[in-house]
Length: 99
Image 1 (spheres, rainbow, N blue to C red):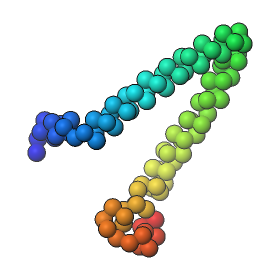
Image 2 (image 1 turned 90 degrees about the vertical axis):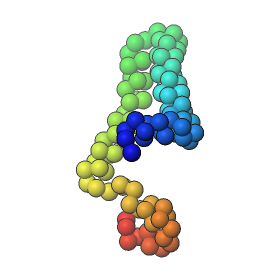
Image 3 (image 1 turned 45 degrees about the vertical axis):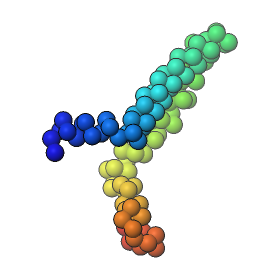
Image 4 (image 1 turned 90 degrees about the horizontal axis):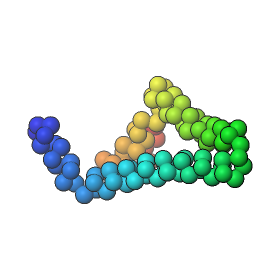
């Protein structure tokens, strides 16, 4: 199968289209949220320092999750192997052998 043929079949998949549209919509909503939150904080408090503090506090969890994800990939845990048996019809009791 060529790359062009793979792309055509992907765009015909309704589940992929819904996922793609949801991802785009979510990214746009995140951007709007940050802009409106910044506007609201400066409007209510009048303090740029409070805005900076709020944005830093909102960024800390994202940074921690990004670092945790990178650590997981580096160490080699959490690569989906715990879910492998359920995808291939094996019993859940054999899942511990993969984790």
